[in-house]
Image (cartoon, rainbow, N blue to C red; front, side):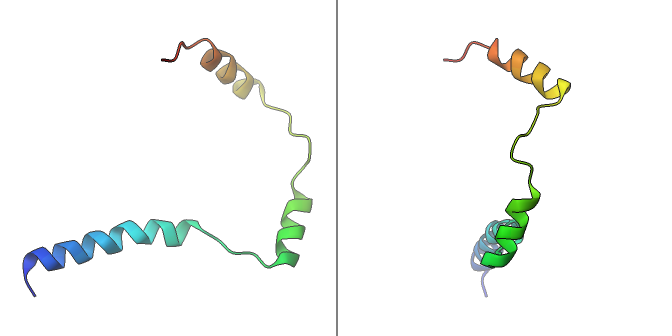
Length: 61
């Protein structure tokens, strides 16, 4: 096998691995249980509020 083909194959595997490892699939029952466990009203922490206020002041192009 030539080096270029080995490198190409390794790059392809390296790109797909994070995608495979970061995705989960839930059954409908598990999804309902998961979503029921998440509070509906989330209150931002003071640190998050400060960060959002700082970000709002940044001028964007």
